[in-house]
Length: 254
Image (tube, rainbow, N blue to C red):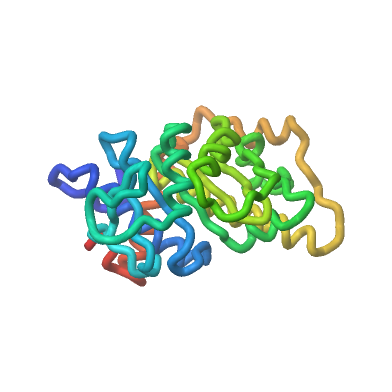
């Protein structure tokens, strides 16, 4: 049973996707993961593999509404809604969706993860429980190519992902992917916390206590007694955060 009130009537999956995407954009502001009107959150339009949802460029993420979300294609054409697709959003996200099959692609320059990616040694180390959950689930792009101006760049990044959940972009930022907005956003949030903890620990100048492979395996192994499977944890987290938005910044579902 959900602790978040669920609608009694059937919900249009496209509208629900827009609501969740708008909520995630506002949450990114609340969590300090955004850069105003820059960076991009996209999702495949439910029922399609060649159409994507996006907040049009120029709207601040804190004011994102479901009704603002546009639909665009690989060519960067706005098929539904009002607004223009920002070039790097097209060049990164369309190929990532098309070539990896990811339903949701979130890209930010969030501060702690980007700070780690500015370092020569930018690997997220399993030195905390949260970081251990990302072990062997991060792809690394160690060769920054400049601004994404062509589809070739998105295709290059898609080729590096190779089934991983997260991509570190050296000198740039991060990408998370997922089957749902809830899954991809929870990964983005948890990733920032893990990077923050590592950078803070590194700032002491003392060596990190990295977990052994056996301990990492123990962390990743779900207990058969666990009452909350990972999918439910993702859903409950996102529903809880939408309730927070309902209190502090309502309107994302308009």
